[in-house]
Amino acid sequence: MARGFSKATSAIQRLLDERQQIQTWLQRLAMASDTTPEQVRTRVRADYERRLGEVMKELQTHESELHTTMDRLEGARAGLARQETEAAERLAEAELRHAVGEYDESQWRQVHADLLGALVKVREELKQSDDEIRRLEEVMSLIEVQPAPAAPPPARPAGPARKEPRKEAADELAFLRSVSEDESQGPAPSRASGAMRAIQEPAPAASSSGREYADPEAKKGATPRSSKATKSLKCKECGTMNLPTEWYCERCGAELAAL
Image (tube, rainbow, N blue to C red; front, side, top):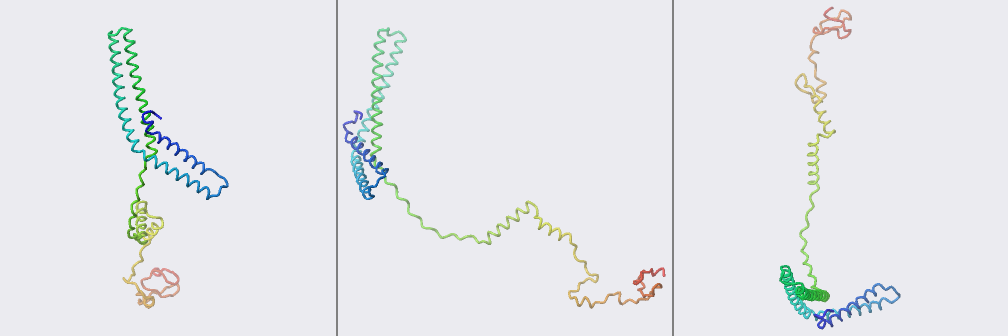
């Protein structure tokens, strides 16, 4: 472990190793398939889980100490970052002075070696500080107490049951939709043929007398007007009497006017 917090976290490292060992035992116990009685396996598993819980509790007691160490490491890293910037600027300035001829070659070799060595050293310390911070963050994430999950909100009381729409209303809506679709696509063959029959079939002719007999017996009793006329025109061919208004004999068909 890095030197920045090796003494402060030696106990933590020991606990982390113990934690890892117990977790390995639990995994092997879950994968083991033998003839061990189930109650024995249950007892061993419970012992490992109890020991793991104790290790985690002890790790959590060091949490405040780890936060203090983290603050110190972050402050040290900020100082190293400033030193790196200053060392890089000093080296750039020396290179510029050498370019304009202020340093001869022997002087430049010495100045360049000193400034470059200082920059390399501070960068190594900065890298080590980053490694320490990263390692400490990993340790803190392992022992950090996870917040308990929030309790689910209480169930809202169920509202009154919604009434199902009446089937008649649904049927009426379906009928209206079908009518709308039929109007947009033209009349259906069955309805169109009925409409055409209604147009093509002539209405019954009105009675010559201006009224219809609803009663069949009354219709039978009616006497045609022509029956009251006297048949006074005799057919000379067959002798049948015909109405004076007839042109042909109603019996033999001879032309009465010619006769």
